[in-house]
Length: 224
Image (cartoon, rainbow, N blue to C red; front, side, top):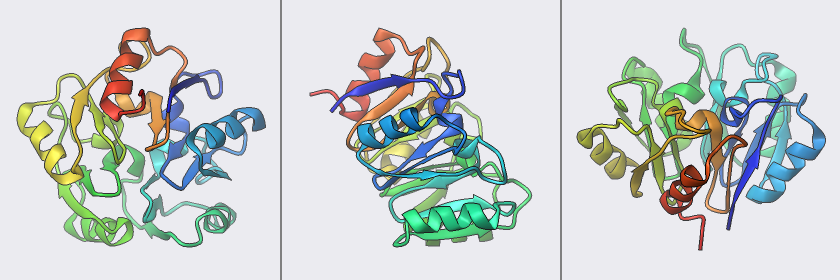
């Protein structure tokens, strides 16, 4: 197990452009084949090369765990077909909502999900049914866009350094893993913008410092 460093489109914000679960990594089709291949190999997952609604910011627009994936209403048919081909055994739900950056609004692993409290109850129910986990509303550091403020795997959660104690306890209870805090890419507190991973390994933005890598390794149990 290890932590790998990478850039996408010349940016250290790799979590904005990609997402990963225990089964799959979704990488924009415009990203270099070599880098996409590295992510698939490092995380030991299948690759889906696609945009979402023609956009490369797939990590911000979609959320997923091993059970399912949530997509915005403007996903294109060919993009949907690409995803279905790689995760045929996984639920895919398209949500007709005004808020569409589900990667920023949902923090999930295979045990539970914390979601933006501004989402409606009906939307929460659909997310729960798709991801097949308990869904609870919550904030991190007093902010609602929990999906960008933390990364959750089946081994741990790394969250914004200013997370409140009651928020931390909620994450522990719902996601059922330890919670630690860190920044990414030399001080960025929006952890998920520069970090993707699963139980196998983690890929971080290339600007991530040595001390940040140490905390990431400890928090997600990827360094033995």
